[in-house]
Length: 440
Image 1 (cartoon, rainbow, N blue to C red):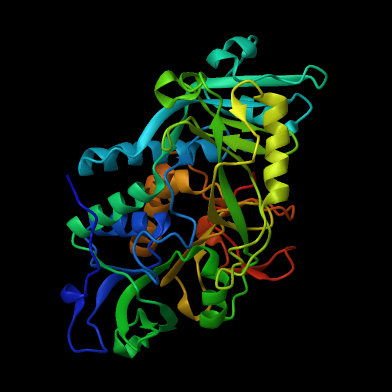
Image 2 (image 1 turned 180 degrees about the vertical axis):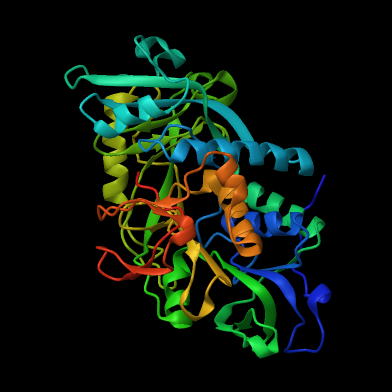
């Protein structure tokens, strides 16, 4: 079984202190996207350096914790192929490492029938069928409001729970096993184009003054993306970090088995108001995770860790009292609260592209995963690695993932081969036009 890598000096890339010899790919940011990109690149024989600003497996970003949902059910038909590709890559990584990070589960989608997003989700998710006897499923855990025309649909193999921190450790370990160097507590403060006369590529500079040279660079720094790219190239991506609260609620006595993962309880998404999602009881005995899918804006370097989440907790509590009153106890609020962040684009869609400008195709950016990207980490990492190494994402294309731009501006789809690197969109600022910017 692979083990998580410890902090490493760049011995395989070292020459003298303060200046490092050439690499093929430097990945900046060791969350799920960066760790998967490092693994994918090193699996292709590339010399890879993975740099993390904080400790490995830290809890300051968006890739930590004991659970993330994986689901095939999406309102936009472009997402399910990427989720299916990711599932295959999750299985491959588990087999290679000996880790188990994915617990399969059904996926339940429910809400008022008038919700266009819900009805599209039911249509797009393969194997999803409407549930006529919701009150008889899972011990009667769900009670649909009678006066609102609710509909529920389940995909028996469409859900699942990912152990987030363990998954990041798995991909870091696999990358290290393939020869990648993994370094934490190494903040990148600059990326510059290397002159062609000096071999081309890029030079990455850290806050300690070290410089690393590489042919390509992949930037996956989550909520810090806008800050880094603004300082590096002047590109101002409209990615807004949100401070979110993960909440665990007490299961009522005698109902624990009904909500347990090994009893077949589903991951679920409710398309009503509020938009609530949850996972089976798994990581914390006697507790179930039920959350509201949003949070207040924040600066990732100046988060208010003492900010009240009372309003969010009250909204979720009201939902529980209406939909799951017999199984989940809301008295006293959530038992456990954990902080996280979303990195939101205006349309909640991913930005994956070459940085362009003076960098051309030497810098690839993956950002703006908007609270629903973790499940697709292995697929995104593969796309980023292949774009950096080959200039195109062959694996995704072969899996039927549509690599085009269909943003909220009404613009037509742009084939990725001809996509301009920088474009003006109706978001109001200069942003990257993406190879994969999918409307949800």
